[in-house]
Length: 399
Image 1 (cartoon, helix red, strand yellow):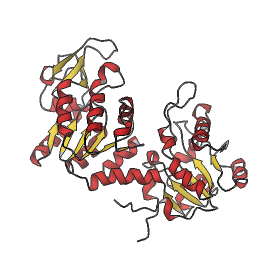
Image 2 (cartoon, rainbow, N blue to C red):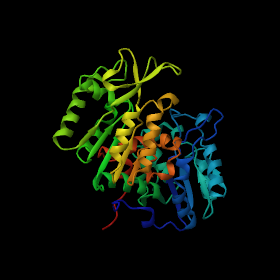
Image 3 (cartoon, rainbow, N blue to C red):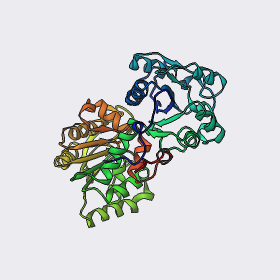
Image 4 (tube, rainbow, N blue to C red):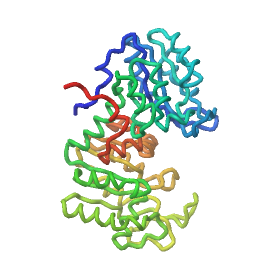
């Protein structure tokens, strides 16, 4: 699939000041050490391209939710350190992202230099898409590259506002790859096309269920959201998670699937626990036999077998959302088993970001998946068929 937007290769970078919006919103532990640097590594091709072209590379990102003021907990300093190691060269770390001190540092840059600006969200104007802030950011550079897929669904100064003041703008390699895989899968999938949808709530995935429901050959539902579908069928679900205001929607989705020939799979058994506390008593029961007062917290072995059979003949598999409360070991088996089944399928396999990416990682299957998205919310919106503001702000390629 050809991406319609201008990409980094369409833009002249040599000798230019190039500002790259990256998504370095990485997880940190209590001692501010990075626990997963996937998002940093995934921007290296774009950075290296600009460095090789002799550009002055200025990187900017947000980290966490510092609520518009400086907070050392959310400093990008650890990211600068990790980048330096991954690039094998010095990364200048700016004390802020706009202002005289930053302008002074940019003025001293040599071709091939790399600088990382401090957290954009230390300024409330970033999330407000403020004009003055956008202009100040734009004044640092001649070319703007957006490589932050994880933030492309936000209309912020660094994803949208800045493009008004830097006419030379394009998508980086990561953004390009995300769009090719996610849009490509939905617009033109190799069939059979199977969607596996999990996670806690139906309401968070309404748009995805509706959009994909028209395009897939099979839908597999797991995770907490499965219980809303089971209750809509009149089953007793005990204390399991349910959205009562979604029961009609769930029933409608199922009816639509049956009437349009889409194969629709729900769990046939589940792991239930007497309480949600770790160490609580658990047992495996058919979904028709969930005891009153018990919690369904994972799919059972029969469901794993059923779902694994269902993906065997797939040519495209899209997976978004875990099959149970997989952060607790006792309820992780279903999700990890599905990770192995998806990885072993002879198919183009695409995993939506966030928790599903973490599950694939924990199952040790990251290398066997065709594409793992770096953006949870952005991936969902793209799969719903929505336009992402950060993408819409970039110019189209000239025909």
